[in-house]
Amino acid sequence: MSSSLLIRGGRVIDPGDGTDAVRDVLVRDGSIAEVSAAIDAADAEVLDAAGLVVGPGFVDLHSHVHSIAGQRLQAFDGVTTALDLEAGLMPIGLAYSAAAAEGRPLNYGFSASWAAARAQVLIGVQPDATIDGTLGLLGDVGWQRSSTAAELTGWLALLEREIADGALGVGVLLGYAPQTDPAEYLAVARLAAAAGAPTFTHVRELVEADPGTPVDGSDEVLRAAAETGAAMHHCHVNSTSRRHIDRVLSAIERSRLAGARVTVETYPYGAGSTAVGAAFLAPERLTHWGIEPSSMVVVESGERIGSVDRLRQLRSDRPATEVLVEFLDENNPVDAALLQSSLAFPDAVVASDAMPVLSPGLVADPRRWPLPADGATHPRTAGTFCRSLRTMVRDSNQWSWLEAFRRCSYLPSRVLDEIAPTAKAKGHLGIGADADLVLLDPDVVGDRATYTAPTRPSDGIRHLLVNGTSVIADGQLLVDAYPGRPLRGEPR
Image (cartoon, rainbow, N blue to C red; front, side, top):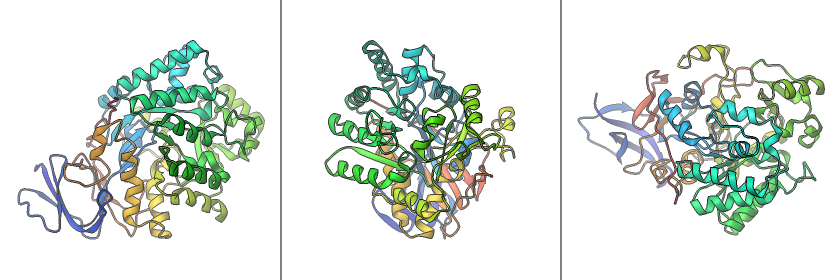
Protein backbone atom coordinates (compact mmCIF):
# COMPACT_ATOMS: atom_id res chain seq x y z
CA MET A 1 0.00 0.00 0.00
CA SER A 2 1.26 3.48 -0.83
CA SER A 3 2.47 5.63 2.09
CA SER A 4 1.07 8.66 0.22
CA LEU A 5 -2.53 9.78 0.00
CA LEU A 6 -3.86 12.52 -2.26
CA ILE A 7 -7.11 14.03 -0.97
CA ARG A 8 -8.50 15.64 -4.08
CA GLY A 9 -10.93 18.50 -4.56
CA GLY A 10 -12.31 19.05 -1.07
CA ARG A 11 -13.21 22.36 0.55
CA VAL A 12 -10.06 22.71 2.62
CA ILE A 13 -10.29 24.61 5.89
CA ASP A 14 -7.01 25.53 7.58
CA PRO A 15 -7.46 27.67 10.70
CA GLY A 16 -3.68 28.01 10.87
CA ASP A 17 -3.45 30.30 7.84
CA GLY A 18 -7.09 31.15 7.16
CA THR A 19 -7.51 28.98 4.05
CA ASP A 20 -11.08 28.24 2.98
CA ALA A 21 -10.92 27.06 -0.63
CA VAL A 22 -11.10 24.02 -2.86
CA ARG A 23 -7.69 22.43 -2.64
CA ASP A 24 -5.83 19.14 -2.85
CA VAL A 25 -4.02 17.81 0.21
CA LEU A 26 -1.08 15.42 -0.08
CA VAL A 27 -0.24 13.22 2.89
CA ARG A 28 3.11 11.43 3.04
CA ASP A 29 4.33 9.22 5.87
CA GLY A 30 1.78 10.53 8.34
CA SER A 31 2.35 14.25 7.71
CA ILE A 32 0.98 17.00 5.49
CA ALA A 33 3.33 17.25 2.50
CA GLU A 34 1.51 19.77 0.31
CA VAL A 35 -1.71 21.78 0.07
CA SER A 36 -2.43 23.47 -3.25
CA ALA A 37 -4.94 23.90 -6.05
CA ALA A 38 -3.74 20.96 -8.15
CA ILE A 39 -1.23 18.39 -6.95
CA ASP A 40 0.32 15.84 -9.28
CA ALA A 41 1.34 12.79 -7.24
CA ALA A 42 1.31 9.73 -9.46
CA ASP A 43 2.49 7.43 -6.67
CA ALA A 44 -0.30 8.41 -4.25
CA GLU A 45 -3.58 6.71 -3.52
CA VAL A 46 -6.40 9.12 -4.40
CA LEU A 47 -9.36 9.96 -2.17
CA ASP A 48 -12.08 11.99 -3.91
CA ALA A 49 -13.23 14.70 -1.45
CA ALA A 50 -15.53 16.65 -3.78
CA GLY A 51 -18.39 18.11 -1.77
CA LEU A 52 -16.70 17.44 1.56
CA VAL A 53 -15.10 19.81 4.06
CA VAL A 54 -11.50 18.81 4.81
CA GLY A 55 -9.78 20.10 7.93
CA PRO A 56 -7.59 19.26 10.91
CA GLY A 57 -9.15 16.68 13.24
CA PHE A 58 -10.71 17.93 16.44
CA VAL A 59 -8.60 18.08 19.60
CA ASP A 60 -10.59 17.30 22.75
CA LEU A 61 -8.90 18.64 25.90
CA HIS A 62 -11.44 17.00 28.20
CA SER A 63 -12.20 13.32 27.58
CA HIS A 64 -12.57 10.62 30.24
CA VAL A 65 -13.34 7.71 27.90
CA HIS A 66 -9.99 5.86 28.30
CA SER A 67 -11.16 3.00 26.12
CA ILE A 68 -11.26 1.78 22.54
CA ALA A 69 -15.06 1.92 22.56
CA GLY A 70 -15.19 5.50 23.78
CA GLN A 71 -12.54 6.66 21.33
CA ARG A 72 -14.41 5.06 18.45
CA LEU A 73 -17.51 7.06 19.34
CA GLN A 74 -15.36 10.18 19.48
CA ALA A 75 -13.86 9.34 16.09
CA PHE A 76 -17.37 9.56 14.59
CA ASP A 77 -17.57 12.98 16.27
CA GLY A 78 -14.53 14.15 14.29
CA VAL A 79 -12.02 13.84 17.15
CA THR A 80 -8.46 12.75 16.36
CA THR A 81 -6.84 13.58 19.72
CA ALA A 82 -8.62 12.84 23.03
CA LEU A 83 -6.93 14.09 26.21
CA ASP A 84 -7.92 13.79 29.88
CA LEU A 85 -6.71 17.09 31.28
CA GLU A 86 -9.40 18.15 33.78
CA ALA A 87 -9.04 15.12 36.09
CA GLY A 88 -5.84 13.57 34.81
CA LEU A 89 -4.47 10.21 35.86
CA MET A 90 -1.72 9.08 38.23
CA PRO A 91 0.88 7.68 38.00
CA ILE A 92 1.32 9.25 34.60
CA GLY A 93 3.78 6.63 33.36
CA LEU A 94 1.27 3.84 34.01
CA ALA A 95 -1.50 5.79 32.28
CA TYR A 96 0.55 6.12 29.10
CA SER A 97 1.89 2.58 29.12
CA ALA A 98 -1.57 1.06 29.67
CA ALA A 99 -3.04 3.00 26.73
CA ALA A 100 -0.13 2.03 24.49
CA ALA A 101 -0.41 -1.63 25.42
CA GLU A 102 -4.13 -1.80 24.65
CA GLY A 103 -3.94 0.36 21.53
CA ARG A 104 -5.88 3.51 20.75
CA PRO A 105 -7.70 4.63 17.59
CA LEU A 106 -7.00 8.28 18.52
CA ASN A 107 -4.07 10.20 19.94
CA TYR A 108 -4.13 10.38 23.73
CA GLY A 109 -2.60 12.11 26.73
CA PHE A 110 -3.10 12.98 30.39
CA SER A 111 -2.47 15.68 32.96
CA ALA A 112 -1.14 15.16 36.47
CA SER A 113 -4.00 14.44 38.85
CA TRP A 114 -4.32 16.94 41.72
CA ALA A 115 -7.02 14.80 43.33
CA ALA A 116 -4.97 11.59 43.21
CA ALA A 117 -1.86 13.32 44.53
CA ARG A 118 -3.79 14.77 47.46
CA ALA A 119 -5.47 11.42 48.16
CA GLN A 120 -2.13 9.63 48.23
CA VAL A 121 -0.66 12.05 50.76
CA LEU A 122 -3.74 12.85 52.86
CA ILE A 123 -5.34 9.40 53.15
CA GLY A 124 -2.79 6.95 51.76
CA VAL A 125 -4.75 5.87 48.67
CA GLN A 126 -2.38 4.58 46.01
CA PRO A 127 -3.55 5.72 42.55
CA ASP A 128 -4.03 3.15 39.80
CA ALA A 129 -4.19 5.41 36.72
CA THR A 130 -7.80 4.50 35.90
CA ILE A 131 -10.98 6.52 35.55
CA ASP A 132 -12.68 4.08 37.94
CA GLY A 133 -10.10 4.99 40.56
CA THR A 134 -10.82 8.68 40.02
CA LEU A 135 -14.60 8.22 40.27
CA GLY A 136 -14.09 6.21 43.46
CA LEU A 137 -12.29 9.14 45.06
CA LEU A 138 -15.06 11.65 44.47
CA GLY A 139 -17.20 10.43 47.35
CA ASP A 140 -14.31 10.08 49.84
CA VAL A 141 -14.22 13.16 52.07
CA GLY A 142 -10.81 12.27 53.50
CA TRP A 143 -8.79 13.93 50.76
CA GLN A 144 -11.14 16.91 50.42
CA ARG A 145 -9.94 18.84 53.47
CA SER A 146 -7.21 21.48 53.56
CA SER A 147 -3.65 20.24 53.89
CA THR A 148 -1.09 20.75 56.59
CA ALA A 149 2.14 22.43 55.50
CA ALA A 150 3.89 19.04 55.31
CA GLU A 151 1.04 17.49 53.32
CA LEU A 152 1.02 20.40 50.89
CA THR A 153 4.75 19.98 50.31
CA GLY A 154 4.24 16.25 49.82
CA TRP A 155 1.57 16.35 47.16
CA LEU A 156 3.11 19.30 45.33
CA ALA A 157 6.25 17.16 45.02
CA LEU A 158 4.15 14.37 43.50
CA LEU A 159 2.68 16.76 40.95
CA GLU A 160 6.14 18.08 40.10
CA ARG A 161 7.32 14.49 39.53
CA GLU A 162 4.33 13.76 37.29
CA ILE A 163 5.02 16.84 35.17
CA ALA A 164 8.64 15.74 34.83
CA ASP A 165 7.39 12.31 33.70
CA GLY A 166 5.41 13.79 30.80
CA ALA A 167 2.08 15.05 32.15
CA LEU A 168 0.42 17.71 29.98
CA GLY A 169 -0.20 20.04 32.91
CA VAL A 170 -2.14 19.72 36.16
CA GLY A 171 -5.80 18.73 36.33
CA VAL A 172 -7.51 20.30 39.36
CA LEU A 173 -10.90 19.01 40.57
CA LEU A 174 -11.54 21.91 42.96
CA GLY A 175 -15.30 21.51 42.61
CA TYR A 176 -15.00 18.15 44.38
CA ALA A 177 -13.07 19.58 47.33
CA PRO A 178 -14.76 22.99 47.53
CA GLN A 179 -13.72 24.01 51.04
CA THR A 180 -9.97 23.63 50.60
CA ASP A 181 -7.71 26.58 51.43
CA PRO A 182 -7.40 28.88 48.37
CA ALA A 183 -3.69 29.26 49.18
CA GLU A 184 -3.22 25.66 48.05
CA TYR A 185 -4.56 26.48 44.60
CA LEU A 186 -2.15 29.39 44.30
CA ALA A 187 0.67 27.00 45.18
CA VAL A 188 -0.38 24.71 42.32
CA ALA A 189 -0.49 27.69 39.94
CA ARG A 190 3.04 28.73 40.96
CA LEU A 191 4.31 25.19 40.41
CA ALA A 192 2.67 25.07 36.99
CA ALA A 193 4.02 28.47 35.97
CA ALA A 194 7.56 27.44 36.90
CA ALA A 195 7.26 24.27 34.80
CA GLY A 196 5.63 25.99 31.82
CA ALA A 197 2.62 23.73 32.35
CA PRO A 198 -1.05 24.74 32.06
CA THR A 199 -3.64 23.98 34.71
CA PHE A 200 -7.09 22.61 33.89
CA THR A 201 -9.60 23.45 36.60
CA HIS A 202 -13.08 22.27 37.48
CA VAL A 203 -13.79 25.34 39.58
CA ARG A 204 -15.35 25.39 43.02
CA GLU A 205 -18.83 26.87 43.47
CA LEU A 206 -19.75 30.39 42.40
CA VAL A 207 -20.59 32.85 45.14
CA GLU A 208 -24.16 33.21 43.80
CA ALA A 209 -24.72 29.49 44.36
CA ASP A 210 -22.85 29.21 47.66
CA PRO A 211 -22.26 32.44 49.59
CA GLY A 212 -20.16 30.41 52.03
CA THR A 213 -17.56 29.37 49.45
CA PRO A 214 -13.99 30.34 50.44
CA VAL A 215 -13.70 32.18 47.12
CA ASP A 216 -15.81 32.43 43.99
CA GLY A 217 -14.75 29.54 41.78
CA SER A 218 -14.33 31.38 38.50
CA ASP A 219 -12.75 34.44 40.12
CA GLU A 220 -10.22 32.14 41.77
CA VAL A 221 -8.92 30.98 38.39
CA LEU A 222 -8.62 34.56 37.14
CA ARG A 223 -6.81 35.75 40.26
CA ALA A 224 -4.36 32.85 40.15
CA ALA A 225 -3.59 33.54 36.50
CA ALA A 226 -2.99 37.24 37.20
CA GLU A 227 -0.88 36.63 40.30
CA THR A 228 1.32 33.78 39.07
CA GLY A 229 1.43 34.19 35.29
CA ALA A 230 0.37 30.56 34.88
CA ALA A 231 -1.69 29.45 31.90
CA MET A 232 -5.08 28.62 33.44
CA HIS A 233 -7.79 26.70 31.60
CA HIS A 234 -11.37 27.01 32.87
CA CYS A 235 -13.12 23.69 32.26
CA HIS A 236 -16.77 23.33 31.11
CA VAL A 237 -17.79 26.90 31.90
CA ASN A 238 -21.36 26.03 30.88
CA SER A 239 -21.93 23.48 33.65
CA THR A 240 -20.12 25.26 36.49
CA SER A 241 -21.65 28.66 35.67
CA ARG A 242 -25.15 27.51 34.72
CA ARG A 243 -27.50 30.52 34.85
CA HIS A 244 -24.66 32.85 35.90
CA ILE A 245 -22.80 32.33 32.62
CA ASP A 246 -23.02 35.96 31.50
CA ARG A 247 -21.34 37.23 34.67
CA VAL A 248 -18.60 34.61 34.48
CA LEU A 249 -17.86 35.16 30.80
CA SER A 250 -17.69 38.93 31.31
CA ALA A 251 -15.17 38.46 34.12
CA ILE A 252 -13.06 36.13 31.96
CA GLU A 253 -13.06 38.66 29.13
CA ARG A 254 -11.91 41.47 31.44
CA SER A 255 -9.18 39.25 32.83
CA ARG A 256 -7.90 38.34 29.38
CA LEU A 257 -7.92 41.97 28.26
CA ALA A 258 -5.76 42.73 31.30
CA GLY A 259 -3.22 40.14 30.12
CA ALA A 260 -4.11 37.04 32.13
CA ARG A 261 -3.47 33.73 30.38
CA VAL A 262 -6.94 32.25 30.72
CA THR A 263 -8.60 29.91 28.24
CA VAL A 264 -12.09 28.47 28.48
CA GLU A 265 -14.01 25.45 27.18
CA THR A 266 -17.66 24.51 26.85
CA TYR A 267 -20.01 21.81 25.60
CA PRO A 268 -23.58 22.16 24.21
CA TYR A 269 -25.61 20.10 26.70
CA GLY A 270 -27.82 21.06 29.62
CA ALA A 271 -26.90 18.02 31.69
CA GLY A 272 -23.57 17.02 33.17
CA SER A 273 -22.32 13.67 34.41
CA THR A 274 -20.26 12.65 37.40
CA ALA A 275 -20.16 10.28 40.35
CA VAL A 276 -23.17 10.48 42.67
CA GLY A 277 -20.81 10.90 45.64
CA ALA A 278 -19.62 14.31 44.43
CA ALA A 279 -19.62 16.96 47.15
CA PHE A 280 -21.96 19.27 45.21
CA LEU A 281 -24.59 16.51 44.91
CA ALA A 282 -25.09 16.15 48.66
CA PRO A 283 -28.84 16.54 49.36
CA GLU A 284 -28.32 19.66 51.44
CA ARG A 285 -26.43 21.34 48.58
CA LEU A 286 -28.85 20.71 45.72
CA THR A 287 -30.62 24.03 46.23
CA HIS A 288 -27.33 25.76 45.32
CA TRP A 289 -27.70 24.19 41.87
CA GLY A 290 -31.46 24.76 41.68
CA ILE A 291 -32.08 21.04 41.24
CA GLU A 292 -33.74 18.14 43.06
CA PRO A 293 -32.89 14.43 43.40
CA SER A 294 -35.17 13.81 40.42
CA SER A 295 -32.80 15.94 38.32
CA MET A 296 -30.38 12.98 38.44
CA VAL A 297 -30.49 9.78 36.41
CA VAL A 298 -28.28 6.75 37.00
CA VAL A 299 -26.35 6.28 33.75
CA GLU A 300 -26.12 2.50 33.67
CA SER A 301 -29.69 1.64 34.71
CA GLY A 302 -31.67 4.71 33.61
CA GLU A 303 -33.15 5.07 37.11
CA ARG A 304 -34.32 8.59 37.89
CA ILE A 305 -33.51 9.22 41.55
CA GLY A 306 -36.88 9.62 43.20
CA SER A 307 -36.16 10.98 46.67
CA VAL A 308 -33.60 12.39 49.07
CA ASP A 309 -33.51 9.01 50.85
CA ARG A 310 -32.64 7.21 47.62
CA LEU A 311 -29.93 9.77 46.86
CA ARG A 312 -28.44 9.31 50.32
CA GLN A 313 -28.52 5.54 49.87
CA LEU A 314 -26.63 5.70 46.57
CA ARG A 315 -24.09 8.14 47.98
CA SER A 316 -23.51 5.82 50.93
CA ASP A 317 -23.54 2.43 49.20
CA ARG A 318 -22.24 3.20 45.70
CA PRO A 319 -20.64 6.67 45.65
CA ALA A 320 -18.81 6.01 42.36
CA THR A 321 -22.12 5.43 40.50
CA GLU A 322 -22.24 7.64 37.42
CA VAL A 323 -25.26 9.90 37.12
CA LEU A 324 -26.57 12.46 34.66
CA VAL A 325 -27.26 15.81 36.31
CA GLU A 326 -29.81 18.06 34.59
CA PHE A 327 -28.95 21.72 35.25
CA LEU A 328 -30.44 23.49 32.19
CA ASP A 329 -33.43 22.59 30.04
CA GLU A 330 -32.20 22.27 26.46
CA ASN A 331 -35.79 22.59 25.19
CA ASN A 332 -36.32 25.90 26.98
CA PRO A 333 -35.35 28.79 24.66
CA VAL A 334 -33.86 30.80 27.53
CA ASP A 335 -31.67 27.92 28.70
CA ALA A 336 -30.73 26.99 25.13
CA ALA A 337 -29.57 30.59 24.62
CA LEU A 338 -27.33 30.30 27.69
CA LEU A 339 -25.67 27.22 26.21
CA GLN A 340 -25.17 28.98 22.90
CA SER A 341 -23.70 32.03 24.63
CA SER A 342 -20.85 29.93 25.99
CA LEU A 343 -20.18 28.50 22.52
CA ALA A 344 -20.31 31.98 21.01
CA PHE A 345 -17.91 33.47 23.57
CA PRO A 346 -14.75 34.68 21.79
CA ASP A 347 -12.11 31.95 21.56
CA ALA A 348 -14.01 29.47 23.73
CA VAL A 349 -13.00 25.97 22.67
CA VAL A 350 -15.25 22.95 22.35
CA ALA A 351 -14.44 20.11 24.77
CA SER A 352 -16.66 17.12 25.44
CA ASP A 353 -16.15 15.95 29.02
CA ALA A 354 -16.77 12.54 27.41
CA MET A 355 -17.57 9.80 29.92
CA PRO A 356 -16.79 6.06 29.95
CA VAL A 357 -19.02 3.74 27.95
CA LEU A 358 -20.60 1.35 30.46
CA SER A 359 -21.54 -2.07 29.09
CA PRO A 360 -21.28 -5.67 30.31
CA GLY A 361 -20.77 -6.62 26.68
CA LEU A 362 -17.67 -4.45 26.46
CA VAL A 363 -16.20 -5.99 29.61
CA ALA A 364 -16.26 -9.31 27.79
CA ASP A 365 -14.95 -7.85 24.51
CA PRO A 366 -13.57 -4.29 24.75
CA ARG A 367 -12.91 -4.20 20.97
CA ARG A 368 -16.46 -5.08 19.99
CA TRP A 369 -18.05 -3.06 17.16
CA PRO A 370 -20.79 -2.10 16.64
CA LEU A 371 -21.22 -1.33 20.30
CA PRO A 372 -23.58 -3.64 22.20
CA ALA A 373 -27.12 -2.40 22.66
CA ASP A 374 -26.62 -2.11 26.42
CA GLY A 375 -23.98 0.62 26.09
CA ALA A 376 -24.61 3.58 28.40
CA THR A 377 -22.87 6.95 28.71
CA HIS A 378 -23.61 10.68 28.43
CA PRO A 379 -24.54 11.63 24.84
CA ARG A 380 -21.74 14.20 24.87
CA THR A 381 -19.32 11.27 24.47
CA ALA A 382 -20.68 10.64 20.98
CA GLY A 383 -22.02 14.01 19.93
CA THR A 384 -20.34 17.10 21.41
CA PHE A 385 -18.42 18.29 18.35
CA CYS A 386 -21.00 17.45 15.69
CA ARG A 387 -23.75 18.96 17.86
CA SER A 388 -21.67 22.14 18.13
CA LEU A 389 -21.24 22.22 14.34
CA ARG A 390 -24.93 21.63 13.79
CA THR A 391 -25.91 24.32 16.29
CA MET A 392 -23.38 27.01 15.45
CA VAL A 393 -22.72 26.47 11.72
CA ARG A 394 -25.67 24.70 10.11
CA ASP A 395 -28.59 25.97 12.21
CA SER A 396 -27.60 29.47 13.31
CA ASN A 397 -24.70 30.58 11.08
CA GLN A 398 -22.94 31.98 14.15
CA TRP A 399 -19.69 30.28 13.08
CA SER A 400 -18.16 30.00 9.66
CA TRP A 401 -16.47 26.69 8.90
CA LEU A 402 -13.15 28.43 9.46
CA GLU A 403 -14.29 29.57 12.90
CA ALA A 404 -15.60 26.09 13.70
CA PHE A 405 -12.19 24.54 13.04
CA ARG A 406 -10.54 27.30 15.09
CA ARG A 407 -12.73 26.33 18.08
CA CYS A 408 -12.49 22.56 17.64
CA SER A 409 -8.95 22.04 16.32
CA TYR A 410 -6.63 25.03 16.29
CA LEU A 411 -7.25 26.80 19.61
CA PRO A 412 -7.26 23.65 21.79
CA SER A 413 -3.94 22.62 20.27
CA ARG A 414 -2.44 26.01 21.10
CA VAL A 415 -3.27 25.52 24.79
CA LEU A 416 -0.59 22.80 24.75
CA ASP A 417 2.15 24.43 22.69
CA GLU A 418 4.33 25.41 25.65
CA ILE A 419 4.15 22.15 27.61
CA ALA A 420 4.15 19.86 24.54
CA PRO A 421 6.08 21.24 21.55
CA THR A 422 4.80 18.38 19.39
CA ALA A 423 1.32 19.90 19.73
CA LYS A 424 2.50 22.60 17.33
CA ALA A 425 1.97 20.03 14.56
CA LYS A 426 -1.73 19.70 15.40
CA GLY A 427 -4.82 21.78 14.69
CA HIS A 428 -3.72 23.08 11.27
CA LEU A 429 -2.69 21.91 7.79
CA GLY A 430 0.72 23.51 7.47
CA ILE A 431 3.50 21.59 5.74
CA GLY A 432 4.87 19.03 8.19
CA ALA A 433 1.74 19.07 10.36
CA ASP A 434 0.45 15.76 11.63
CA ALA A 435 -1.99 14.19 9.18
CA ASP A 436 -4.84 14.12 11.69
CA LEU A 437 -7.69 14.91 9.31
CA VAL A 438 -11.48 14.91 9.27
CA LEU A 439 -13.52 14.92 6.08
CA LEU A 440 -17.17 15.74 6.72
CA ASP A 441 -20.36 16.27 4.80
CA PRO A 442 -21.38 19.87 5.62
CA ASP A 443 -25.01 19.30 4.72
CA VAL A 444 -25.68 16.46 7.15
CA VAL A 445 -23.07 16.69 9.92
CA GLY A 446 -24.75 16.56 13.31
CA ASP A 447 -25.26 14.55 16.47
CA ARG A 448 -27.55 11.52 16.83
CA ALA A 449 -26.89 10.52 20.44
CA THR A 450 -29.65 11.26 22.96
CA TYR A 451 -30.05 10.76 26.69
CA THR A 452 -32.02 7.57 26.02
CA ALA A 453 -29.81 6.37 23.13
CA PRO A 454 -26.43 7.80 24.09
CA THR A 455 -24.13 5.62 21.95
CA ARG A 456 -25.51 6.51 18.53
CA PRO A 457 -22.54 7.75 16.47
CA SER A 458 -22.77 11.20 14.95
CA ASP A 459 -23.66 11.76 11.29
CA GLY A 460 -21.54 13.27 8.57
CA ILE A 461 -17.99 12.14 9.31
CA ARG A 462 -17.05 10.44 6.05
CA HIS A 463 -13.33 9.93 6.62
CA LEU A 464 -11.03 10.31 9.62
CA LEU A 465 -7.27 9.94 9.52
CA VAL A 466 -5.00 9.78 12.56
CA ASN A 467 -1.29 10.20 11.81
CA GLY A 468 -2.11 9.52 8.17
CA THR A 469 -3.89 6.21 8.85
CA SER A 470 -7.59 5.83 8.17
CA VAL A 471 -9.78 5.14 11.20
CA ILE A 472 -13.05 5.89 9.35
CA ALA A 473 -13.33 5.37 5.59
CA ASP A 474 -16.49 6.04 3.57
CA GLY A 475 -18.40 6.40 6.84
CA GLN A 476 -17.33 2.99 8.15
CA LEU A 477 -15.10 2.27 11.13
CA LEU A 478 -11.93 0.33 10.37
CA VAL A 479 -11.90 -2.02 13.36
CA ASP A 480 -8.21 -2.94 13.05
CA ALA A 481 -7.00 0.68 13.05
CA TYR A 482 -5.12 1.75 16.19
CA PRO A 483 -2.83 4.55 14.99
CA GLY A 484 -3.18 6.73 18.08
CA ARG A 485 0.06 8.07 19.55
CA PRO A 486 0.79 9.64 22.93
CA LEU A 487 1.04 13.40 23.30
CA ARG A 488 3.41 14.02 26.22
CA GLY A 489 4.65 17.06 28.06
CA GLU A 490 8.19 18.39 28.03
CA PRO A 491 8.52 20.71 31.05
CA ARG A 492 11.09 23.46 31.28
